[in-house]
Structures are given as C-alpha cells and as structure tokens.
Length: 93
Image (tube, rainbow, N blue to C red; front, side, top):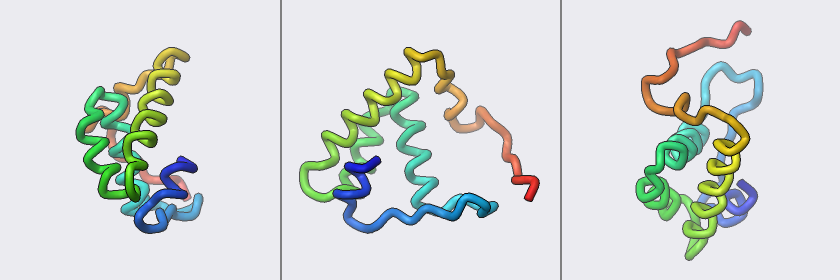
C-alpha cells in the first residue's frame, strides 16, 4: 500500500472511519484485492497500470499477490471477496 501511495498517479482518497459509504478509491482498492484473491492478476495489473506511475505496477502487483498468498496460507477465506458472496450491510451508526 505504501508503494501504491507513493507511486500513484493521483493521491488516493480514503473516507474517514465513521463514514457510512466507501469512496471511489476504496472501491477500486477492494476490486484489486478481489481480483488478486480470485487469481485474476491480469485484470488487477491493468488497473494498477492506470493508478501507478512508470513501471511501478509490476512490483505493486507482485506485493499484493504475495499478501493474498500469505493470507490464504494463514487460513483466511479469500473467496468472501468474490462478487455476490456477501450481502450489503449498513453501519449501525
């Protein structure tokens, strides 16, 4: 995430924690994590090429893929990130 933040074409905007809606940039990041967790790294790399400057997309993709591999190895169920796997939930605030 530090690499993406430092090499981004534009500053990524993240909503404050108590915000009830995710920002567009947060939705893009969630999509990237979903793509890597489902093995769709080609799509994620295309998106990263639009977000990151120069040749940064490759190293960022490699790092994100490694994180997903480690999360799976630690027992996290990444299939929950698949589209349609979860229902919408509003914050109680």
